[in-house]
Length: 479
Figure 1 (cartoon, helix red, strand yellow):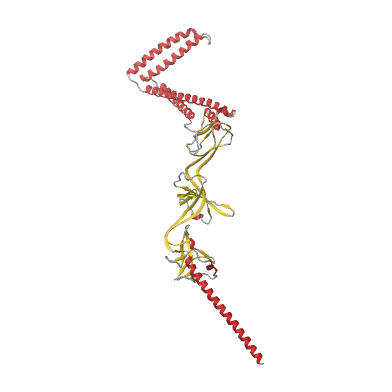
Figure 2 (tube, rainbow, N blue to C red):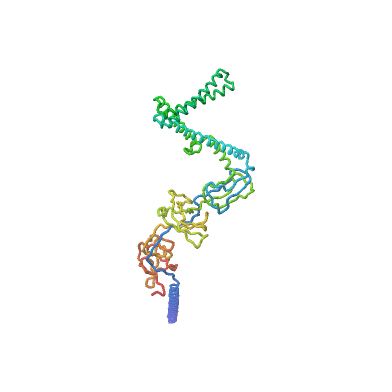
């Protein structure tokens, strides 16, 4: 029995010893673990990157990437086949509208083009003749009107005596010529009409009669002896001359296409048709611009539809970018933009929004709107098809509370920043407003100007599941 009691005592002592030993081991381990964590925290605070909450100005932008294009661009192709005779423009040359850039040899053109060339020359000659004839008719109609108006005036108003005497002398001479012509004609009046002598005498008689009538009208006009019938006839002649002048003027205007381009003479219609066919043998600039690519060389054989030149109007350079539907209502025509190019890394260009699409397009389930930005002062370094980074300035704020975008984290669905306060890392909920590439506006939150923000909080900070409530995470080395 004593042995049994002794064994029990021994067993109890051994168990107590094991428990004591375990407790000592745990305490020692906890001590070393605490020291290790404290040392780690003390070391990590030295590695934190921080920034100070400040007040300042904020330029909020919407960023997008696009491609540069010229205001107007055209790929010019040949309208017919043939052998290239001459080239008048090279890459980099500025050209005017309708300037001939290259043309084919006439002898190498298809038959219909050669025929059009001949028809063009004939039509041009016909047009020149039409212009000459209508110009002559217009001049004659103007003289006839002036004569008719002068005659009418003279009939109604007596002229100077010297003019009357001169007109009477001319009338006497005209009457004498008329009498002689009549006397010469009368013996041949009954001769056959194909008699040559009769025809000559009749012509002279007729001319003499016309001269006499004109001399009589002139005399009556100067003498003021005309009756009402003569005046009525003279007025009718004035009206007739006016009408003839209007017709002559209209015909002349039609020939020049000076009144209405809808009225085209037959000669002009032929000329236009021939010119359209003949134009197939040449390349003309459809607008003023710069040759940005050129393919032809003299002597080349070309085919219809083959590319000859690329022409771009570089006076205005535009960038088209796609903006998300989330941001589109913040973009307006007239807003400024900052434009950068990978090809020109040392420069920033300014631009302005010139177009905002009224309707969006869906791509892969995402709705985007096209925005057009024009460069204010492009130089030779900016070229069509370059990739451009565009930041559209949508908001400019003055004297607002700012935090770096790098400091903002999301904790349980809320935006937070981590602030160093009394050696502790404190999460603070914030509400943000406008943002730029580097900073954001703080609309609300327990932040003050001068607070120290942590830009790279330790990863284990995000392991806490409770919402931020001002509770700090103790950091070693804090003050």
